Image (cartoon, rainbow, N blue to C red; front, side):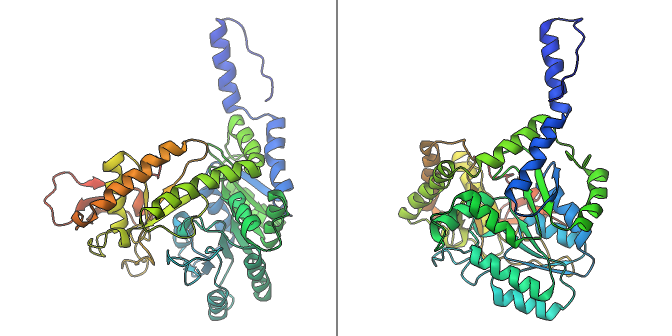
Amino acid sequence: MRQVPIARNSNEHDDVAVSHSMYLSDIGNSTISQATSKPDTIYNGLIHHFITIPGRAAENILFSVLINRGNVVPGNSHFDTTRAHIEYRQAMAVDCPLDNAFRIGEHHPFKGNVDLQKLKAVLDSENNNVPMIVVTVTCNKTGGQPVSLDNMRRVRALAREYRIPVVFDSARFAENAWFIQKREPGYSHKTIEEIVWEMHQCADAMVMSAKKDCNGNIGGILAMRDEGWFRQASENVILFEGFTKYGGMTGRDMEALAIGLDEAMCSHYLDFRIGQVQRLGDKLTAAGIPVQQPVGGHAIVVDATAFLPLVPKDEYAAQVLAVELYLEAGVRGVEIGTLMNDRDPDTGHYRRAKAEFMRLAIPRRVYTNDQLDVVANALMSIYRRRSTIVRGFRILDETKRLRHFTVTLERAGDSVDAPVGAPGGDVL
């Protein structure tokens, strides 16, 4: 932090308050250097980078450079803000997941992989209309499922054949590397840092939210190899975020980002963090609750259609389960299904999801296993009375994009005076 002289014309507490305020608002050269040098040492060759306040700002800046109206953007499974940023530019997001990615009972060590045949079909049919391929690591939409290094390399090779760049959403890069170390042949002897380095050899650019594997309160990173992209992106960073060296971030949050990048790759931390998620998943599975198998890195996803089979398919079973869980125990999950999918921007029709999942994303370094047992017990309680839950919700009001954040619902078949708002972020 840059030292700023403070006139001592008030009491010591005022001086401390002013000093703290300056720390929050002023970015010194040492802080900038520490935070902005980290991507150089972690993300292999992605030497041009920006810090942004949220991860979706990084998406917005990069996509403004690369995506044009009418483009088609394939990926393993686009999550909500990624899809919305693509469609905002009147382009089309196309998912290319494995066939069993959403089949919770079918085991595959890397359910986040891109289906290469589906990807090739998109590239063949769209010719020169694909500006980039997006690979989300881990794949959030399927419950934190990892992508193998072999799959990354094959995507990279196919992209090179068609002269198309590959963009990683690396929000959970360290968790993905942990799964590679544990599951992919030939990597058990490598460190997390070495695997992360190899992963990003396969990317031409990456975006990430620092609130995930960076363990930060706020922040995002955009990094790329191409200097031309960097120059174009610089204009939007300055226009919408802040100066290119800090993107509107405070000194405190810049330092937290730099430290978090290191701590995220600590193998002992990852063993505990992912192990805690696995423990919760194992407990739910033992109780007969239908959860995605194998359990992912940051979340448990419950198959709400299997959990609540009597709820009509058009009444948002995953949203019903999220509301029931909140009423049961004050635990907040999030729907990942047809409600999150929004309507087709061209036709206005619903886009039915491949699965109606209710996600429980587990905060890092927050809860004990005993506290997560409360979550498990609440779901078990709902599961025992699932035969009494026979109706869902209908929409009263929705936005054009990302409707699941602000949608207003009412119970289907009831004359409910007070509509039920959608639960917010999945925070216990």
